[in-house]
Image (cartoon, rainbow, N blue to C red; front, side, top):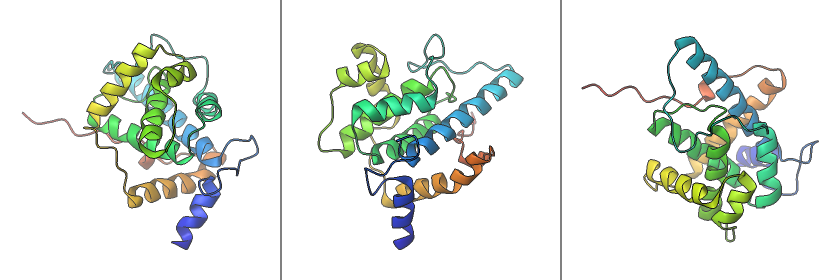
Length: 200
């Protein structure tokens, strides 16, 4: 477990006060990088294949002006949830994408992120803000936030528990990707997996 502690410390998960150069915990920077790279890759694939993305309640009519990094920093600043909530939200988003026909894109990533963090905070933290407050942080209406939360929970079959092993594996992957993202490289194994189409 010593290696796990080192990983957690390096990501800023053990000492909530440990911040990177920008004042943002390293784990948030890595999650933002992975999500940014993933949505760029998905949008290129959709453009090349000329396929339509499945439209969900999480799709906005246009891409937000904030980058994923800026948005995750905004959530971190105002939601004041534990850093672990962001890792769990990332796990939830991957699970959501595996269970639906949607790709992560610039039209849905922000809304999936605010919903995932809110759901994780409600599940993990002793205290958390209500949906109306998260809606203000996320730049959506309370009614939208409520609908997104319900869709998210039903898509996950209300299965919110994340095992220590899954959490640790996610942290290790993020830690391993740290050096690669600093060099501009990305490991495609980390992108959300698509479920194979059902055979009829």
